[in-house]
Image (cartoon, rainbow, N blue to C red):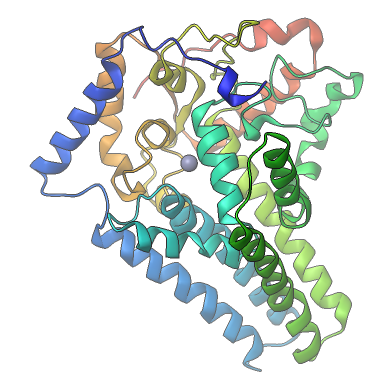
Amino acid sequence: MKAKNVKFNNQIQPDILPELKRRVTQYLTDKNLTAQDSPAIYFKVAFWLVAWVATYVWAFSGLVSGIWLFLVGILHGLTHVFIAFNIAHDANHNAISRNLNVNRLLSYTLDLIGVSSYLWRVAHNQDHHGYVNVEGVDSNIEGYGLLRLSPEAPYKSFHRYQYLYAPLLYSVSTINYVLAKDFKIMRELYARGKKVPTSEIFSLFASKLFYMTYMLILPMVFLPVAWYYVVLCFITVHVLVGNILALTFIVGHLTEEAHFPEVEADGKLSQNWAIHVYETTNDFATKNAVLTWFLGGINVHVIHHLLPYVNHTHYRSLVPIIKQTALDFDIPYHQIPSFSQAIVSHFKFLYAMGLPESVKTATEPVSIPVE
Ligand SMILES: [Zn+2]
C-alpha cells in the first residue's frame, strides 16, 4: 500500500491536535520555555558529541590495551546509539533549533554513524510518523518475511518461534541498515517515481565510506591488535546497538497494548490521525528520569509522535497534558509503567503474532492502569 493511498478520517474529532498544540504552547509559555533551543538540548548535543570523539581518541591514545581496549571500543560504539537518540532524532524532526540550518547540520550526526539522514527522514518522518502500524507503509513494522509484526503481515509457520529468534535479527538490524537498508529505501523511492538529489546520493556514499574507515580500517591499521580483534569489537557493538535500538523504538508501538487499525480496500482508515497515533503508540517508564535522559525521550512516545517539533527534554513534563487531552476527548492512552514491562509485552506480542489462530485477539488492547 502506498502512503498517498492511505487516508485518515480527519472529520472525526478534528479539534484534538489543535487543542493539544494549544495546551502545550500554553504550558511552555507559562514556564517561559520554548519548544526548541532549550539549554538542556544543547548540553546533550555537546555531551554526546564530546563522548563520541573522546572515546575514539581514548582507544587510540595508547593508554588502554587488551580487554580494556575492547571495552573502550564498545563504549565508543554505544555513543552511536545515544547520538541517534539524543541528537539525530530531534535534529531530523527540526526539534533542536528554530534555525533550520542548525537542525540540518546536526541531522548529519546520523551520517557520521553510517546512516543517510536524508533517507532516514523518508522512512521515519514520512512513512513511520505518518502511518504508524499501517502494514505496507510504516517502515518500522517491516519484518522482511522473517518477523511477523502486524496482523496484516503474511503468516509463515516458523513465525511460531519468532519470539525466540527475534533478538538474533535485532542483532543484525543496524549493520543491515548501514550496508543494505539505505539502498533499499533509495530503490523504493525511485520505484515510487521520486528522485533522490545527487548531493544526497553523494552524502550517502561518503557517509558509508567515512563510517567504515573510522570503525574498521583505521583501527586495523593503527591499533596494535589483530584485524579479527577489530572485527569482533565491531560485531559486538552492532549486536548491542541493534538490540538497544530495536527494543526501545519498537516497544513504543509493537506491544500487546497497541492497535493495528485495519485499512479498508480503498485505503481508508476509520480514525482521525491524532486518535490513530494515541491508539497505536505507547508511553513507557515515563517516571524514570535517568532512562528518559539516555533514551532521548523515546519512552515518552505519544507526545513525540503528535508534536515531533518539540524537543525531547520537555517530554516528561508534558505527560499530564497528553493524558488529560486523551481523557477530555475520550480516547485511549497507553502507558506501560516500566521499561521491563514494555519489553515483556513486546515479546508477548511477538508470540501472539506467531499464532495464526490468536492474531485477532492478540491485537485487542489490554488495559493498563494509568498512573
Ligand atoms: Zn520520530
